[in-house]
Image 1 (spheres, rainbow, N blue to C red):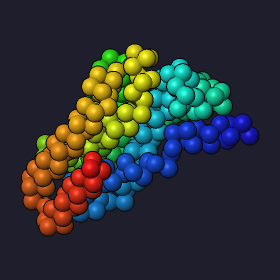
Image 2 (image 1 turned 90 degrees about the horizontal axis):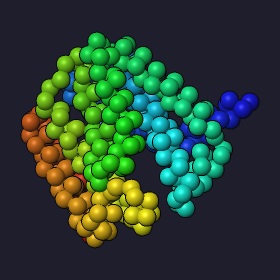
Image 3 (image 1 turned 90 degrees about the vertical axis):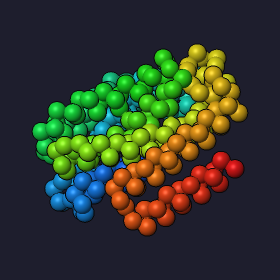
Length: 250
């Protein structure tokens, strides 16, 4: 059936299976909020909300960037520029994913429902940030960084500002890697008039900024661990992350 075929291609396009990599941030926030493992009902709706939100954001990004992807040799084979999918179908997928996200938020608590449009705005508007600011990498980071804070709200129905330290840490962690990823599009971004850190600071400067972002992330992680009084295992985790990043940037 064309519908099932289009759905399969859409899920492949947005790399649906990669949703699992975003879940640890949300689950961390949820477990801290619950001082343990949240109830099964809360966990189910948090996972549904995370997957639907990410699906909406990824699909919307493909629609927003369809013309850009068509001009970039690296992305010309993606489903929309290649004509495998139509913008109308992917847009419908975005709408359905957004509706599922709002419904999931409504199953959690009132504050989650009230803030669900704000979360969607952050996730969807990232796609246009590269057209207006070189710091779009931080916008992407923040879009992922709100996951632990959102999960905290999902469990508690309120916000503890300590969890925002993890939001900030994830923001700089993702931004640093996105800067590294963007280096491969340095020439294209410059010719297409797109904004990015590599375009403005060059590849060497971008590598330095990525290192700075990751140092800031480590400092924020330390502050996060201390603020919650987490134990030696958490400290060991921060040390392991620091060693991996040192290797990454060596």
